[in-house]
Length: 88
Image (cartoon, rainbow, N blue to C red):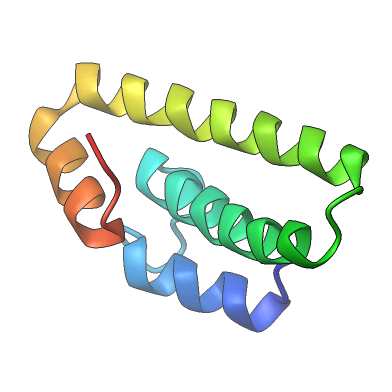
């Protein structure tokens, strides 16, 4: 789980403006942070199948957002991939 402070920090770093919470960049960044935390959890708890399913859903959701952004605005897509150091 992302804490309120971590979530606010991520939104502030990737948001287009002050109150931006819904742009694809912010959603991708929040999903990436959640994926990182869940991955570290699953390294400790190998048999947690329910969390593994949630992780796969988050990865699929992030992929969908990335695909949308790539089709909508290639420059913003490249910027967020570089900023979050995601593979293309």
